[in-house]
Image (cartoon, rainbow, N blue to C red; front, top):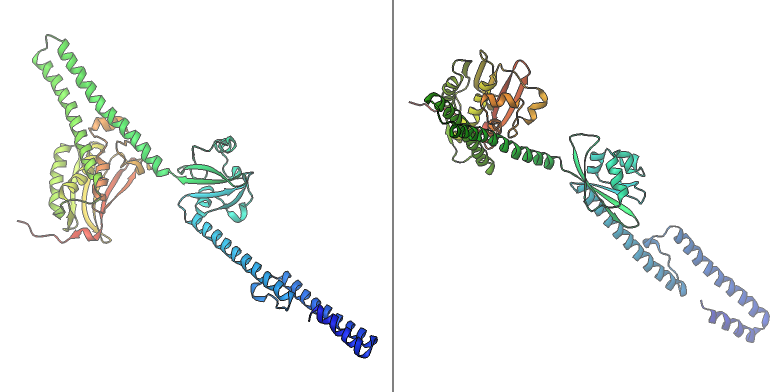
Length: 427
């Protein structure tokens, strides 16, 4: 139906039958025209209330063209919204998969979004804390100052208020309309390694400087004193020999530790006769103890181990010598080899002074000593347990430590079942 047809038809009728029928026809045509547009307008209004590409109305004439344009616009809008939704979902998935914490804040420092790592590190509950100020959750003056300084080129290092053992590195990245992205990284292990490195350098320097100072002092004494009898000379030479021997032991242990740390698995694996090895260690222990302790060997298993005998001898020997050094005279030391819950377990139990619980996690660190003065008196280098731990790790074994202050300690080397082999007859 077009406006041209509506104009021509009444005129033809007017000429044929008169004005009244023509006017009636024109009114009827106008009503149909208006109803046609009202129907399309109503369809358009209903669609605009709930736009959907699949339900775009159909029309004729100009309305068909208009609906076609609307369909194309809605289709593009729907595609754009779908792509944006997918991009946002991928962004959230990427943020949640990141090993670092991510917190998105607005210009006021209020939380808009965070990933699960950040929730764990800062104790955030996104449903509860959305819109919360970040300074409310990190109540540390250094963080407040860092946030206000507007200079985020360097990260801020601080200990978590929720877990004092957790060390975090956080950095703010401005973006958008004065928004900020907070990136937090757990550097606890890095800080621990750095602390161990600093302690290692300081301890090596100290351990070497002491005997060198002593030897230098004795040499200076020998040079300055013109009339030394043979007894005095021998006394000074023996003292220098002891200090030199101490340095040699330290260097030897450092080289052994370096060798063990260079690779993760034992070299030249062989069948190791553990009962024979422990009998040898018992003889060495009796010699080192010189009758000051009661030593026993309990062989509850005849199993052998698949591994490197030199490394196992070093690990077991360090556990035994430590027990002798830290057990008072008259104390008892028990060496035991057994199978327990599918594992091969070598343990050294002593009736020594025991160890406070807070020291146990750090005992295998290089040069870590519970009592530094006592350690030097006993002649230890401070590397024995570190060597034992690394040697055991290369055999997929673990070192377990149990201790009660004033009652003694038990050090156990636990080997997996795949390392155990049946003992063989020996001549």
